[in-house]
Image 1 (cartoon, rainbow, N blue to C red):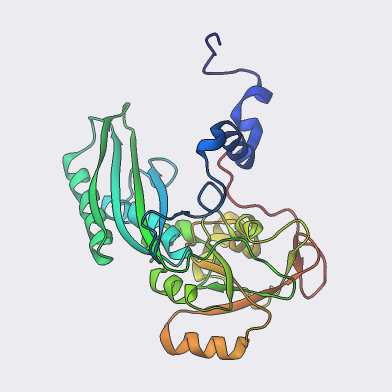
Image 2: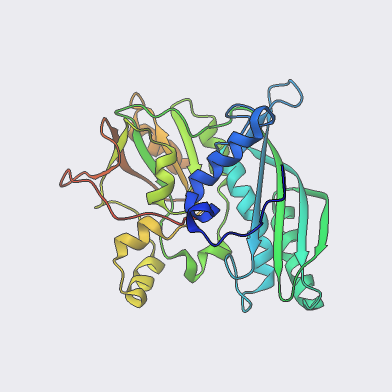
Length: 322
């Protein structure tokens, strides 16, 4: 094969034309047999791999913080360091896993302030030490002018990894915490729901789970199918105070922010229709001081419906990488 141009002026020949899901499909297609079938391969918050043959399966994930996208030049570097670790921990939480070991990779401009770097590493240390995560190595690369990319690859272990698949009509949809407005503070200061995720993984009534990173309206589709949608009770949908503040500034609706803002890092999970919802709620309340809301029921109709009107909720989508 001859040389291939790195850049294209034709939009239809650019990866941006594919969109995020199309890009993932392309990667899977050309990785061929080196990409194992789901859930060991691409398709969930973490890959699930049996390294040891014992009852605990390895869960592998990787995530980044990029200057100009996940934080800005005036962001507190300590909080940026914590965010890098916690983004990875949130993926492990959504699988019901316990973090173990990580690699830290940095692409750094030589102009970066030494003091900024120190504060960033202190934030990484704090988030890792809080959960006994060991950082055992990584890679350091010189970046372009005023460039900073932090990446972490993390290994955890789960006895009962909770996947995204398993939706059944009649099941209930639950979410932890409140959603929306994360750009005002939470995207840097969130707490990954490790304890809650581990507990949920031990409840046989929990069918599937993920963490909300790109916005509810987008991420919910990973739990649904072409035949199964969800009827949402918007009257009880848990909305953060920052969501209301952000809506005043942006002039967008509160609902749009709650459904699409992303970086909530809350757990969204499906509870079996055979479960006793009241008893489940009570058990949760005895253990966790964190709001838990039943927001909908899975129905035999694709997409997201308003439970009050029965109409399809359209026009909302979360963050798209391409």
